[in-house]
Amino acid sequence: EFSVLGRIGIGLGIGGGVINSMLYNVDGGHRDVIFDRFQGVKRDLHRPIIFDIRTRPRSLPSITEIKDLQTINITLHILYRPRAELLPKLFCKFGFRL
Image (cartoon, rainbow, N blue to C red; front, side, top):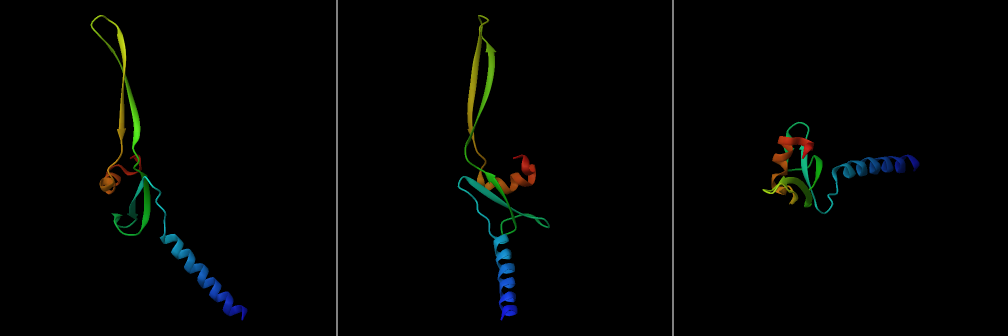
């Protein structure tokens, strides 16, 4: 009885490990790009690469002088995020530097 139960347990463990390696979780505000080591970026299941697509701020400060030689500090505040439908193309072109 133990050998039969042991074989069933080992089979369930291996099957569970295979199923667990196929599933992945993508949090809210993130998108994934599927990458296959042989064929590159794909739309079906392979290794996921998860990108954060939430809107992020960036500030660009600039110091400028006006006519009466006073300096003015100007800061441009930009909100940006990558477009989810273009993530596969962006990953192929730039890789992880996105």
